[in-house]
Image (cartoon, rainbow, N blue to C red):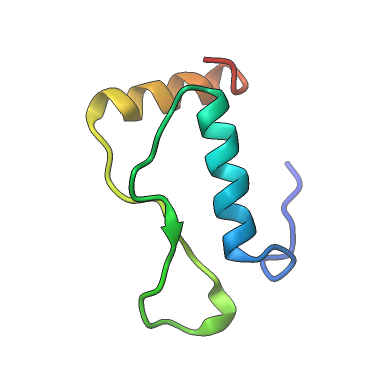
Length: 69
């Protein structure tokens, strides 16, 4: 698996890309957002938030199936 340089993608871009992919798989992460907590700015973290167990299971299934839910 290839990883990208963590500074190559803006957190807001990553959030929108992930939201689009999750929506296509019928999954909603209500707390998905750019992390605004105080931390070193170069980290650019994404907040995934909490989800119900059924949503976590749905996400796991989508990942196992290569994104096809």
